[in-house]
Image (cartoon, rainbow, N blue to C red; front, side, top):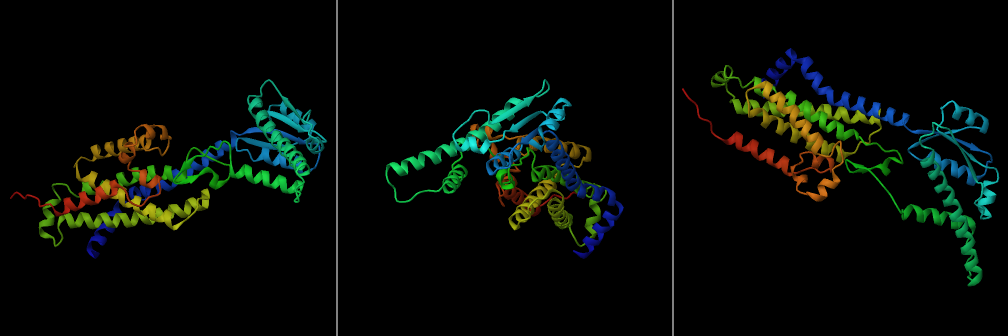
Length: 377
């Protein structure tokens, strides 16, 4: 094994740029795409100005609710400055939380609580207005609930009297526990709620999985280069057979690639705030074995490097579209559930360690290794 490692190091020394490029490619490409996507997503948020005419808990809570919306970028401005920015097209719309907002809500009044301004270039005024009004209706409904509960307590002479704060906290808790409508995106067994209200249509590990697949396929051209007819006769005079040589080199590559997978984990944690868990490392290791075995088996089917490269790009493209890593295919899976079994990325996206593709690759490699070859003099 020592001699094989030394031989591999000699090969790597001559091809260090090619090797290093494809080892770093999944990390660099994924980080760049996610950083650019997050920057674009932040820039595409609707800029909205909010004017607070009173500093009360209910008004502050309304402002924070609007600010927490992932599709809106909120600016706290005064009325004159807000309208000036609206005229300059720096803001899409301006909403003024009028003075006396909390008092009117507590009295059950819903007239002239919020004033909205828009311009001829306000493309998102109506949906943002509906969002703001929904938060106001929330506050009004809670206040009405307090009034009704107190009335019922007096009517039925209940011993326990609920305070206003207790009713408000209970209503908020019920709202959290029993959402009437909730939409979430799920990637790599994580929902959008895991990271608050921010969401993205692209997920770091989905992008990495596709780039890692392509890079692994293109790195495994070594198997084709070292099975050339001019090289094979040399193994007759060596203590190691061709199959042993290829298999040992396969595990050397798996070790090297997994080392860079660990680097990817820490890189994404530092640059993209991805969480590091032992289960994630285990799933990535399982995925690394799967795509390495798959790339190795594919390389054994041809001696033509150009054909191998073409098939590698084509396979990556098909898997990218058909796996659901980039485009959700939930509707298609409900109609044709058997598609899930054809997806080699399914185990990784579902955060599972073993799937039928991995078992199939292991069996095929065992058959290849144990099969006797015919030799012609």
